[in-house]
Image (cartoon, rainbow, N blue to C red; front, side, top):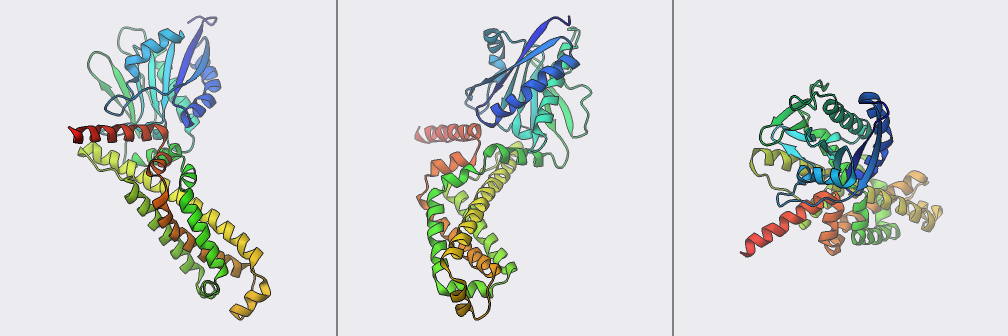
Length: 362
């Protein structure tokens, strides 16, 4: 390639975290491609939501050529929030050298160092294709370091190569990556009714003298157990009430269901934990404002300090979180589902529910 020749790689990305990551990668991708492939490269980011097919996947490669023709790009790489799975493990990337197109599944890249891994994968697939002599289908992942990564080639009308994780811990990075794309902090807003009832119940504990003596009698270890128990209870109730548990279907289905359920469980646990901690801070502030130290000493029968206020707030927050399970009955089921999953996974699950309802109605 001539050093004066300019080429363009387009990064099509799902709205949200995937688009933000594509924007972070674009500048470095230009420099890395110029160094690895040669010539001048430009990277453009196109934030768009490609439609799902009836199976819940994105038929990206069937439209890759059309996208390149419309935009004038030399290469197109699709960055998606959808977790994708093979029989052998979570799929990181899929590439078609003949179409100059690649697809990267963001969750499979884990929760830390994502930008570096994503950049390396994009550069590698383009470099291997551009470096081929055209006499045979290029090996997009030849020489890829790391025993946890392997290559699989589909036969048929076109050659598509898959890069997926291997090894006993292959599901762990994908679970953590899925939690990251699920945006667990959004769950707190979706649980507004739970949070309101939890705050009201916790405030009752601050004003109720029996709670003061009870918190004074409990050790930090027992308070920790109580907090853990109410968090688990609320998480389980949210899963059961909102139908968030996936059932396995076949061998690959069992692995994919395990990964999805683990990510759902940890996403909910993170969101509920944040709600619990926020409630704890509110109770600390409320207790310190309302309860005069001398009066608290007269009720407890000993001098009080910050630790006594902290234990009272801790128990009150736990009681409030327990009441939050009741408040979750008044939250919108659809809002909870939407906040639990990434936008694309939520879209996939909604499509699956609609198809099941149509099948039941026939």
